[in-house]
Length: 555
View 1 (cartoon, one colour):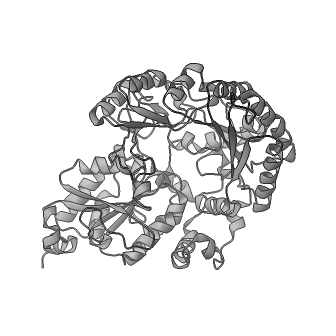
View 2 (spheres, helix red, strand yellow):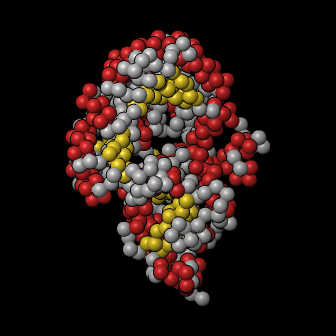
View 3 (cartoon, rainbow, N blue to C red):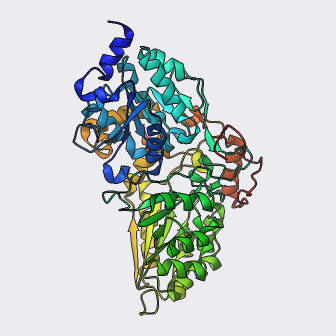
């Protein structure tokens, strides 16, 4: 049997149920979750759209549902029948469903145990934040934004595979392409590829949008559109503010064209700091005029205006979500939050006057250097918030408020990558302090994240390849929590110490384009409580990102 014929047999192209693939390369584009998650995941849908546009590729959707062998949604083919299995990796918790899906499909878990097809690859945010714990599973990692070359990588794999190349030859053919990491073959660090316009670095020329609008999605029957990518504020705890540099914004006419083309009943605006987009109000007015409902993913308190709230209330807004982030002004300044108490109180006062029913505040605890004094200042701030919005005191104010409290997880490629994570005891003590500050206030409710679950996320976020046995054990045990009981690793070594400046990190296999010296300077500024100005619209050379390692996009 010739190499080409053997490839054809392996790919299933000789079988009656798959002959419709013709000469195309079958690719399983998998989400480590159910349909509700996948149909609301813009990154996965962007990859699907890019690959589905190539008539030489046969792209199938695969949703990895717990306890069920993964199969393609359209053809029903099992995962193991695909020569390329591509996973979208968004959250650290995705490591377990990815490994479980491969086990359920009877695909060997490690790349070393798979000398033959399929090629198992990964992409998405984890590919350029810290892929180290899952790298033993992957044959190939695409590091960066899908628009910046994923289609070219897949097309080269197609040409090689259908010409009869074996798996090793296919991987060798793409190992040096931009954004590709083939463990053991590619020289590291791999530069994250970015789709932006060389002559307009602040432009999001090809905004991601929903390919599937479904009643089964987490955001039901909603057409999601990307308004901006990245964030100019540089909050020192937020990975999005660093790994998605340079920050980019869409053009009004591009989003209007998408809506006109799809004509959805409801549009969801996705992005960070949406109120920074100068065309936000014109776009919302335009949507209202054409009778299209809408919702917004995030609003900065300093961007709340009477006109914006009037438009949102007319559209049916009942809950306004604002990020308070830290319990004290000292910590907010150190975190580079760029939020004044005056702006916050003005925003909640406007919410009360415009009939907003519910205020939700995001609050982070467990900051490096956090003390009880930081929580002492939280109680008077909450009292001011309650008074400004008339929370829980009558029909004319806000009916109730929620404090959603989460521990700080120090993320790679942020200034916090050198910081220790708070212990479970410290997290629980912080929760108690928040509850005590909110308890005297009518209409306030406190919700908290499980402290041990947050520490687990921190372990995976900062882990290296030595964590892979924990992933294997979690597949057998059914959860990371149970697997930890038999894991012989040392959590403290990953979480409970401040790292020295020059320590090598597992995520150093990736270069996001922001210099390590810049991140260290921001860590020092956090400890000194010194803020840094947000990214200027025209870009700058300070952090090294703008114009570095860029992949030209559409202009």
